[in-house]
Amino acid sequence: MPRGGKFLFVLLGVDGGGGGQLTPAFALVRRLVRRGHEVWVMGPPALAQRVPELGATFVGFELLPQPTLAPGAMVEEYVDELFAFTCSSLLTKDVLSNLEGMDVLAVDCMVPAALFAGELRRTPTALLVHTLYHWYTEGIGADVFSGIVAPFVRQARLDLGLPRLLAEAPLMPQLMDSGTLALALTLQEFDSPLSRSHSNLRYVGPVLDEVAPKWEPPGQPLVLVSFSTTYMRHENALQRVFEALEEIDAFAICTLGRALPREAINPPPNVLVHDWLPHSSVLPHTAAVITHAGHSTVMAAFAYGVPLICMPMGRDQDANAERVEALGAGRRLSAEAAPSAIRDTTQEVLTNPSYREAAGRLGARIATLGYGERAVVELENLLR
Image (cartoon, rainbow, N blue to C red; front, side):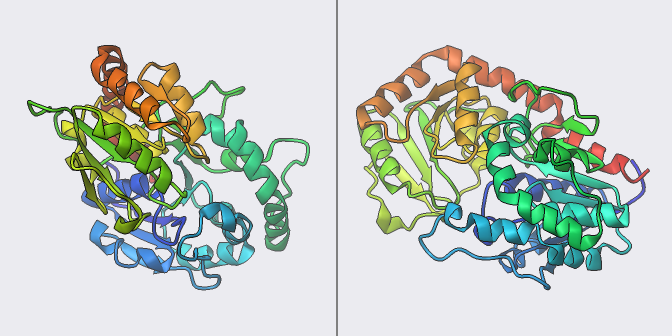
């Protein structure tokens, strides 16, 4: 193992302190700390209490505070404000003020301003790509993000004296290719084929905490219901899932992810609701997951060989749900699906072993990548 290094992570809490992108980043920080490295995490104030629990040191944004969402608001309502922040030259300067003495910079892929700091200081920089790489660089996500961030990126690079990016070439691949490494925290088998190669791209698989052996208790199958950790106006979808589960001989656990108050839902007797619960404590016993198909939830389910019923609601979830169904590891439904459709699809996934077998094959592939060990090795290689 290389000498102990100093790592600076720059993370984005989508709603101040939540969002699925934090799950793999936090797990990666924990792994680096356990291996004897020093880690600093730069982020919004909401992370101040959570970061020390990882064994890392918290550093807040100072020159430009991250915008926060009002209660009951969705991230989509703050997109322009959010990316004005993540692409700001002031944020670059904030990162630069903490980069002195660091060996490696690790950056959430949605914070280009932090990437510019690594470029200016010539610090080895790893981008943490917590979505499907194709979706983010070539798919619908690339189109959406390019349209939003392009003017902010151009202005920041001008302010910082950095070379202009090529106007005639797609923006997102240029940003991802400019880092020393782009770590795709997904399975290459799960991603869609890319139109061209990227020399700095490494598919390292999802970064997860310790994965327990799969075990299913006798009796009723257990269904995990897990929708977004950020608010997506999903109360109605959850209620329709509950209605479907009432008619299934199964027990269910629903995790709200702090996105919804308890009073917003009315679960039936066979559904136990938690504000938050580590999925690692539930998935070893789970027969199926009903979800919005956020990337972190999909990867965690695959790690335990659990098939999914996907009800995507936006963002990258449609792309994830398409791949789940294409690989035979679950089914995709509309977010507006009726309780009867949810019931019938859940019954199918629970009783047809082909879905579990397909999810198990993907889980076996995740295991070969060490649940994050490959990502750690790639980061440690930057110390040499």
